[in-house]
Image 1 (cartoon, rainbow, N blue to C red):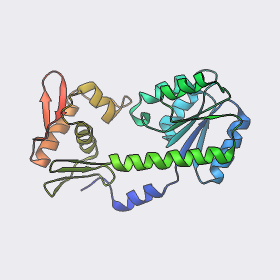
Image 2: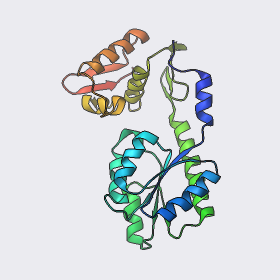
Image 3: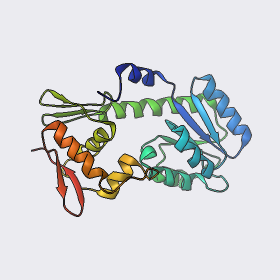
Image 4: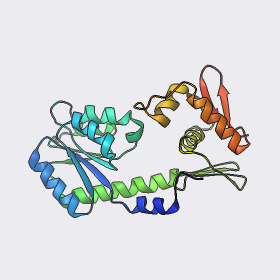
Length: 239
């Protein structure tokens, strides 16, 4: 039995997009929050980088609005931390700042921000930038969601794996593991990297967990897609 249903996927796709607003000025938070909710977005707020990291893990936003100059942890430091987390390594980030010099803008974009808006914030401009960025990211994700490698097709939107016309039904972590390895055929993924990206740092699993899941993938598919690199890790190799 698959771990999803088409009905559940359709409901998920209809949910409004979520935005985390991070700024240490309450009036700016209130102003942005009002305009985003009016437009139909789901929002959450944070007043500094430390709070933003904590709330991001719970709220899992589709986009961050991140002020640069904040106490406790500024926007640059916050973004650096977000980008090393598998859940947020590609999540769109728009920096909000009162700084107007080119050096600050370049520094923000080089850290991994997708856009940069200076204060005072014009709601029409902000909403347009958000809409454009989310639309672009959605298009990019749809392109990336389907992988075709030879006779193997992995569809991350439908959570299906088809090999030579036959569907292979995998459990959630088996699907995520195969998708990760297949995303870069021939590349060796280290065991620690696989554990981090598939199971996450907050879940404690045994050292044999990967081996068990790979064995199940091989059994269910009847094909050995995955090569073990002894003492190093695993790689996807479909010949």
